[in-house]
Image (tube, rainbow, N blue to C red):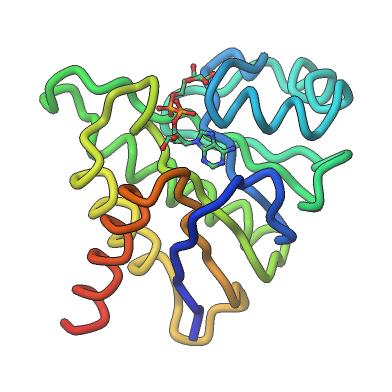
Amino acid sequence: MTQLTAVRGDITQLDVDAIVNAANESLLGGSGVDGAIHRAAGPELLAACRAIGGCPTGAARITPGFALPARFVIHTVGPVWRGGKHQEPALLASCYRESLALAHDHALRSIAFPAISTGNYGFPLALATRIAVDTVASSLAPDDPLQRVTFCCFSDHDLAVYERELAQRAAS
Ligand code: APR
């Protein structure tokens, strides 16, 4: 059974098989967690991303982690929140599903997600957290080879929201 946990921390420091990057469609870096991951991974990450040539919203691409502790970076592009009537929930769910599909394709055992789209892209945290936990949980098989999924929160507030969501799911 895959272990789902939430932690407070800097995702660039997590020693997991893959960390997920909340990127933009150019894949050429940015601020937020995108900027932190590129800074920590080093310039080879940008070169690898440039070679991929972009990523549509809701999709995911994988590169090596280079100077990061994580072996891989899975870059996914979350939706910009525009009020909720522009497929934002479905596109956010797709980010989690497509990232897990790449983890499965590469036989990864552990993966860490940031709170995709809840920073610069303005997606309401409570709804995004519900989508993240529900999508991850429903994408995993009972005997899934993925052993650990970590939701890496950058604030105590975000961590509390994730912990509440995980506790509700465990109780249901
Ligand atoms: N570790 C973990 N989480 C982090 C880190 C970090 N080092 N830095 C920021 N975060 C958190 C933010 O606090 C937020 O909860 O990641 C979450 C996502 O916020 P953003 O990084 O702003 O990502 P997003 O809302 O998806 O916006 C993506 O911002 O950086 C640009 O290029 C990126 O255009 C894209 C957009």
